Structure formats: C-alpha cells, structure tokens
Amino acid sequence: MSLEEDLPRRSAAFQPPVIDRWDVEELRAYIARLQAEIARAEAEIGKRQAHRSAADAFFRRPGG
Image 1 (cartoon, rainbow, N blue to C red):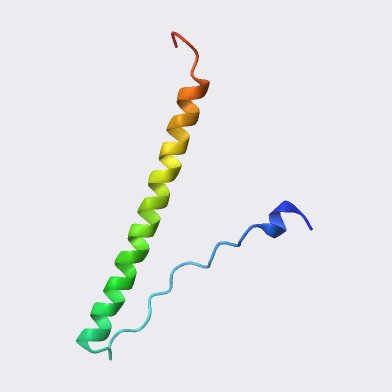
Image 2 (tube, rainbow, N blue to C red):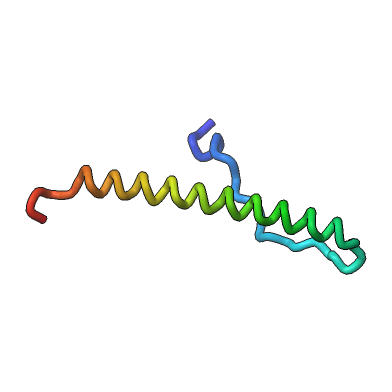
C-alpha cells in the first residue's frame, strides 16, 4: 500500500440539494450546516497559512 492510497480522497464537486420543497426550519438547519462547514474550512486555511508563514520565517535568509 502506497502513501497515496492511505490519504483520503477528495470528494466530488459540491452538489447542492434540491431545496424547493423544504420548509423554513429545514432551510435554516441547512444554512447552519453550511455555515459550520465554511467555518471549518476557514479554520483549516488559517492553520495552513500560519504553518506556511512559520516555515517561510524559518527558512528566510538573514538580510534577505
């Protein structure tokens, strides 16, 4: 088994559900789930940017 096989696969492109017949509470719950997922993605971006900044600072040449 290779390292690539161990990594989780990216999911297919986002397919929004058909919401035409959802009531207001179902729509609000859906929005809350989407907002939670957005917050999770933004937190991951923040972690990756911090990691990259730390690596850049570590490997930056003095005086450069």
